[in-house]
Amino acid sequence: MGVKGFVEGGIASIIAGCSTHPLDLIKVRMQLQGESNAVVETLRPALVGAARVPGVPDVVARPPRIGPISLGVRIVQEEGVRALYTGVSATMLRQTLYSTTRMGLYDILKQKWTDPNTNTMPLTRKITAGLIAGGIGAAVGNPADVAMVRMQADGRLPLAQRRNYTSVIDAISRMAKQEGVKSLWTGSSLTVNRAMVVTASQLASYDQIKEAIIEKGVMKDGLGTHVTSSFAAGFIASVASNPIDVIKTRVMNMKVEPGQAPPYSGALDCAMKTVRAEGPMALYKGFIPTISRQGPFTVVLFVTLEQVRKLLKDF
Image (cartoon, rainbow, N blue to C red; front, side, top):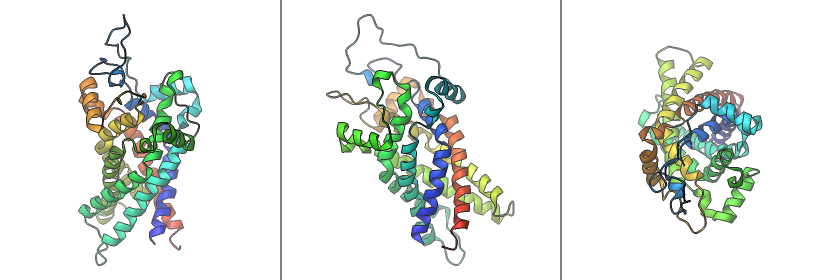
């Protein structure tokens, strides 16, 4: 019974991840907008310690920020349609490791903590199950997460600075060789925190909203209920996780030069530099593509999950 939950969650997660990958790539690119366009010493952390070029001002004019649709069009024009699926191999591995683990563990905890008499589970226990499952899943999937962020962000760099990973395996092996095995868990604390927030808000709210809709007779247990519950869960997860997601993306994507201090010493340092340079709302950069991706992702995830459960109910 326990293994079945992992299989069902894994299949649904991989399908959802691949189908919404272009939106995730646009989200990552938007979260990195403006990162290296500020004052060198205090607002341009990536250049701290670098030699200043005579005649070049410390303050660089920020290019205008563009929206998700314009950014998507620009990526297609400059890099081709295939660029929208850059890093999809990392997405598949991430969903295989991270989402399969979190969905399976949540299902096990849900079965264990559901009251056998009423067949219900209190919201607090759903949230606790989500926090536990999300944290463990994120720790398992962090190497694929780092690879995915780097592969998705590569196209925004000048040609000479691109990492040009050919696949998720190439990315992980090169990171381990060039930066050490520890680099595979760069930003792991952020990944774990984000995953705990996302899983708790996404899975717990889906179950809670679905149960409320059915109990109050608004709709029966069918496709309409699944879509409504999952989209609401996606919105809640987006609002809760976006600030952590922005910091996670920047920490994972930072380039550490040999012999130099890293651009960010940790999550708090990254958050402070980001807010100081770009304002508090910078933590909600990429929110439109986040909800644009999280909404469809959550809908595809749970609708697929419900269908997979029906197909595998006799196993």
